[in-house]
View 1 (spheres, rainbow, N blue to C red):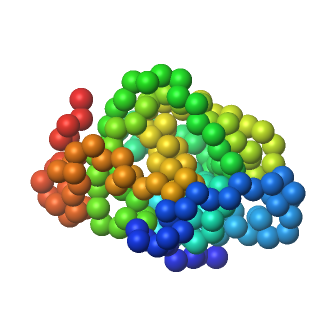
View 2: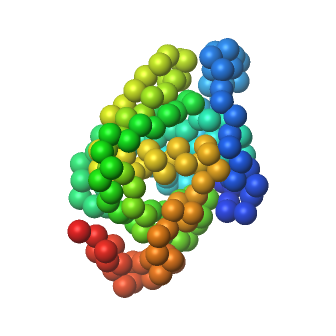
View 3: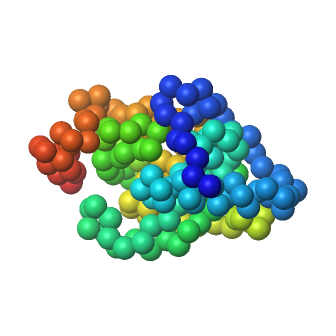
Length: 180
């Protein structure tokens, strides 16, 4: 079921979401949450979405990336469910990307994040899993996981002049601004 997206200003986006027990993962209804996240992500054109973005304060997010991204990088991450994720930074090297968000519609902002991470999480079956990610994929994962801890990408802007409306971002081709 497609659910409405909670936008910046909704208090659910600023709270630390609750961890999910293995019992809850295996309970009736949890698969429906995953299905709702997938349906909503697909409907609104996202590459990831977190439960707080559809009004559910639980540490669950999903990501799916297939093919070339807007930076010309080939990334293939099949539909993946992250429950109670923990990030470990494997390399402090930072790189920035212009981020957008379903909860902050119509804007893009330049955010720098670590580019080599390890994520430890429970998968959809409640099994311990981990994923090592670099580059844009590492950025996408960190962006989605921020939602589980009450953060939005706009909180991570170092330079507020690098926040733009989507139309101006495209019109003035800001995608190459500040990128190495």
